[in-house]
Image (cartoon, rainbow, N blue to C red):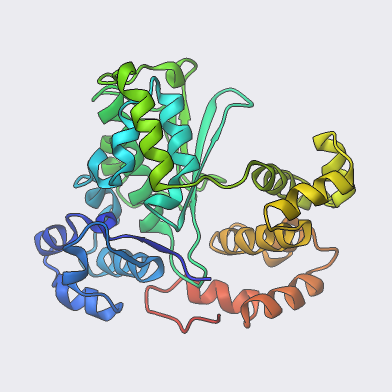
Length: 340
């Protein structure tokens, strides 16, 4: 499955590319896009070529912070119709929950998760392309754009408790300090932001409570969230896979319902436990293979396979290539043939 995102993701790209001595039309054409594709922000374009474009632009300009620079062109309005809803939410928690629930409305490749189970609260972000693609610049753009959104909603001088990046530290970390503050963590096990206690309760400065019923009604006309049961099962599958206890019986016990009841609820949503496990493994495989710190044996374990050989056989059936072949292709900004 190939993922798409709104062309507004590349708002400001031609201007930034030219300021860095690049030819945006040539680079866009090199990944199969056109400058005209960017003229309409609501146009949907494939996500993997955008990731390659950002990586090529960083490489050819010598700007490791290219993604951060591009985020400077983003505004809340870049989210399109969803921005009308976000700015009327009562607090930052509610705004982030809307972003996470309806992320597919503006970016089909991005995944955002808000975790409040432990202190500090944590916003984790990752990208899924459905094909090999580099992630570093795309993740930098995504988390820096989120910083801009939070500052526009809450306060222009807001800073996270710490900012985390799964990639190694850049040669010059100063642009990251300017963007996120002094508390940076590189080669982290996730990309995202840690928040101070109370940050999530920060009120949205321009929120008008009398508008909220109308924005919620509007939201229902532009998007439908994923069914709750499917979401719950998917989250549990992700937790249970590396523990080797991912079964329908275990998930049912955790949810406090009978397996036949869970089967019926998923069937009502035109889904099944096996398809959720398969889909979760597919998404996680792409995420883990993009990170060099995970060996193929590690990935096999994290996906709940008893042996790396079983993982390799499953992966080849799913992606028509080997895990190592996928990892090699995802490191390059040069387009690789889609294995789908």
